[in-house]
Length: 71
Image 1: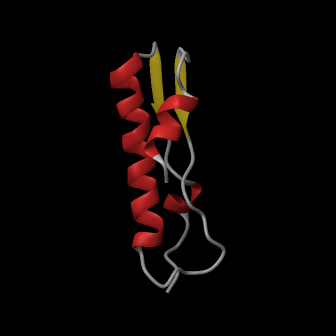
Image 2 (image 1 turned 45 degrees about the horizontal axis):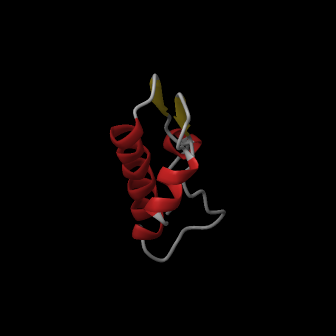
């Protein structure tokens, strides 16, 4: 959840593969527990690319996207 740490961790990389996203074993009390870190992590990876450039950036979805919705 710290944008600067993500940007710095990727400094000097030619390629970025962003696959991280929260994956809880039980339904969270608030959907923002999943959505906020997923969106902010993706934005940080893209901001890193804007700052340092990369030959390629790959963003993948979560396996949760293909699972039935938990009620």
